[in-house]
Amino acid sequence: AQSVTQLDSQVPVFEEAPVELRCNYSSSVSVYLFWYVQYPNQGLQLLLKYLSGSTLVESINGFEAEFNKSQTSFHLRKPSVHISDTAEYFCAVSNRGYNKLIFGAGTRLAVHP
Amino acid sequence: SQTIHQWPATLVQPVGSPLSLECTVEGTSNPNLYWYRQAAGRGLQLLFYSVGIGQISSEVPQNLSASRPQDRQFILSSKKLLLSDSGFYLCAWTNFQGGRVIEAFFGQGTRLTVV
Figure 1: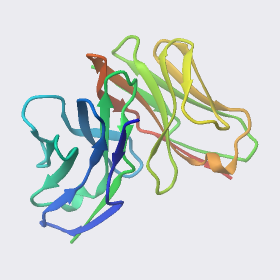
Figure 2 (figure 1 turned 90 degrees about the horizontal axis):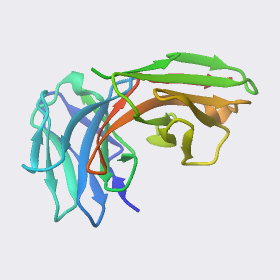
Figure 3 (figure 1 turned 90 degrees about the vertical axis):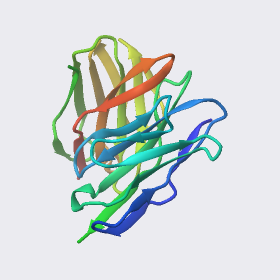
Figure 4 (figure 1 turned 180 degrees about the vertical axis):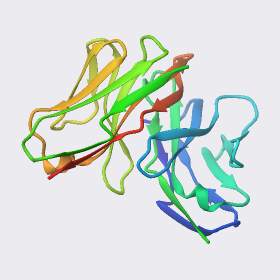
């Protein structure tokens, strides 16, 4: 069965510092990969996704993630975070034959002034 | 464009009372629909999903049930709430391509507190 591991449950960081949120998945076949963001008391919003093509995908607010097939990873990065980036981030994987996304446990990003 | 409505936003219910949470989707037909729960400080737990009217798959045994009376309506219910049913409930629907989910869209969630 496929699974998604987010190695850090919480990541504290100072404003304007770089950040990396780690995500690894287990699957022997090709997958689609996603990062979702959840602000307090809200639903999840798609941040970025990898379906095919370039292994580096970017979001409109400065986040990027790189699909690494050999390491089965899809880490999320941002070179300089803002207070407004404080949220919970979920990595997810989609596989052929599954009617659902498989989510990781989430990483809570806390940006401090 | 597609939208997903979920209500109520917050709910406080006594132990042993019934529950009904409703989710409706607009702008798409025959969507796959999902109910997720987030307990405090925990990740997303998939409770139910439905690929069509009257078709419900349960992911975990629990005190809850789901129904899909119409194509774009998904209802989460309980006959008698437990304290452990407290949490943040999210409805979602997905886009498919090539037999795989290519995107999921979420409602704004319902914060349920059982007292």
